[in-house]
Image (cartoon, rainbow, N blue to C red; front, side, top):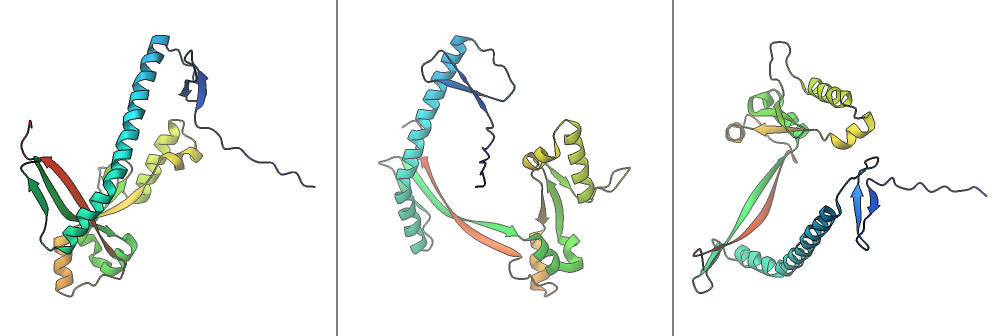
Length: 214
């Protein structure tokens, strides 16, 4: 009979027992902690209060969902309605739609063809935004060159190739001159392919005090 060996998932953190009953510290593997007992007690008390508040906020957030859905439903059904003011209860409720536009980079390129550079700038986003095509005294920065340079810099710092994929999230994001693009579409110079532009409507429900200090 073939023996099946189950691979256990490697834990990201290790645990250390403390002098407090049932309380353990979490730490990175290979690190030795040197923490005073009074610091552990203070850390525990702060963590306990934070967790308690977190669960209370989460529970209240869940309780709000039915009211939020009903508010949005009424606003959707009554064109032009955008909220409510109550002087007695001292609050202003503001409700409104927000349109989130998502662009499919490849479909956008196919749609615009040679006109793409005229309306779109590409940024390589790695927790920072760098214009692709930026010219330095030495080179013109391309997407490939940026990826290679950033990868090499992190590997030189001791990060393995395997871990590099986990921590380095890279994405090319097009920044569009939407006014110019709209003009080109209206003039019939370009036509967007299906899926190049996706619009999603989300709703914002905000509450403010009508009068401060009350």
